[in-house]
Length: 262
Image (tube, rainbow, N blue to C red; front, side):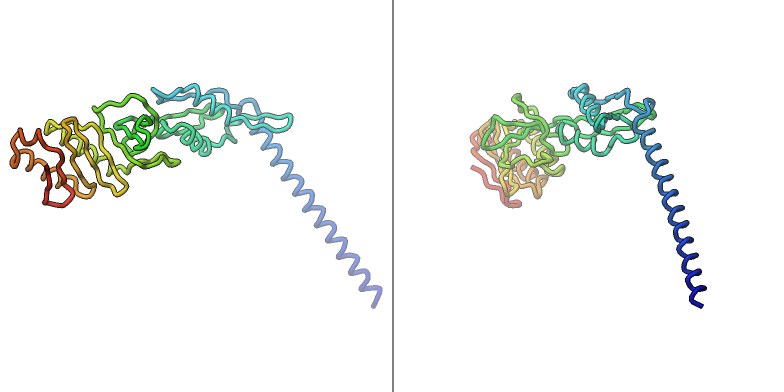
């Protein structure tokens, strides 16, 4: 009986050894196939980035964008270098361009196999100015999304000039879109009343003071701008004469239908 049990154990060990060898060979085969495919896609000349087309940037230096993408496309390893379109990181490169170039409002990179990248740039368009209260010489363009994106020394009262204590954050988001639209509502109504604004000051509570070239200060909130503008129109057209309007120091519209002026 003992001899028979020894033979059985010996046969089981042989079976396990054969199974282990098959698993090892199979693993080695698949690893070899994977490495061969990787090397083919990474280093085959046909798949190396040869052309980068940048479109949509009128004010942006397209060559800088192109050089930046070309640098990001290259992958280096000891004694090896690859610019394969297969391993080019589209999403990360788009994010880095947006972070590096604040005047770029949007970027889309498309792979055109086998060896081309096409880049579509959307520039931010300036519609207003934003200046810091502590340093009024430090002014930026604002786009329609309320993003301060480019420093400028040339400002004009043809566009709203907004002065605030706010600091630029990483996204350079200064105003919400709805807040910016209210500034334009005030700006346009003042022009309709032949009152030109020099600049708008917005405090930390969201209240606005319009400083005008007539020397009048007009106080608004951002809560109900249209109602406040209607009240201002009643004061200027029905309550006061032209001479009295010219002598005004301020109009305070922040208290509902109660309007204070001097």
